[in-house]
Amino acid sequence: MKRRRSVLKISGRFRVVEDFERDLFIKVSEEHVKSPKDWIEDYRYSVDEFEEVLNDLKSNFEKDRLYLSVFEYEKDLLGFLWGELRREENSIYINSLWVDKDYRRLGVGRFLKEQLTIYGMRHKFSRIDTTVSRKNVSIINLNRSLGYEEVESHNVFDFTLFPVFRTRKILK
Image 1 (cartoon, rainbow, N blue to C red):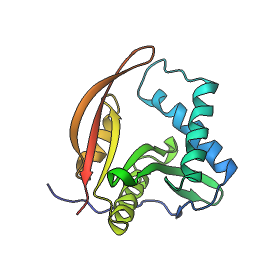
Image 2: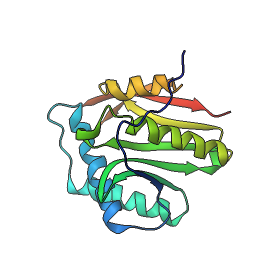
Image 3: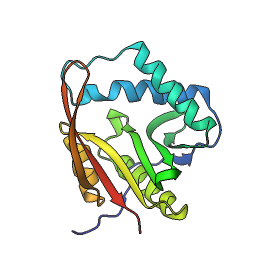
Image 4: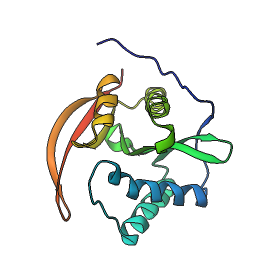
C-alpha cells in the first residue's frame, strides 16, 4: 500500500491542549454527541449523553489520561481528535475525530491522526485503537489509508442496532 503524506489544503493552527479550557471542552462534547447524525439517519442524542461526554473529558484531563488536539483557524474550531491514554495497556484509544463539515476532505482529519501517531511513537505507546461505525465510510477509508486494521466486530445496542468494529494501528 502506498503511503500518502498529509497535505493540508487550508491554513490553520494545530495544538495539543494542555490546560482545562471549559469552552473548548463543551464544544468538543457537543460535536462528539452530534457527529453520528452525519452517517446515521434519524440519529438523536440527549443532554445526558452530552453531560456524560463532558464529564469523561474532565475526568481524563484530571487523571492525566487525556490527549486532545485541535486544528483552529483564528477562533474557529475546524477539527479535533480526542483520545484516552491507556498507559496500563500501553495504548491510545481514539474516542472521537471530528472535522467541521465545511472543512472536510481538506486533510484536517488525516493531519490530526498523523499527529497522534507521532505523539504515540514519541511517548512509546505500542498501538492506537478506535471503534468505527460500519456506516461511516469516510473514516473507514481514512483509517485504511493510514494503516489501521480491523481487529474485532460487534454491535452496540442503544435504541437501534449499531454495527461497529474496532480498528488498530501498531506503532513501531
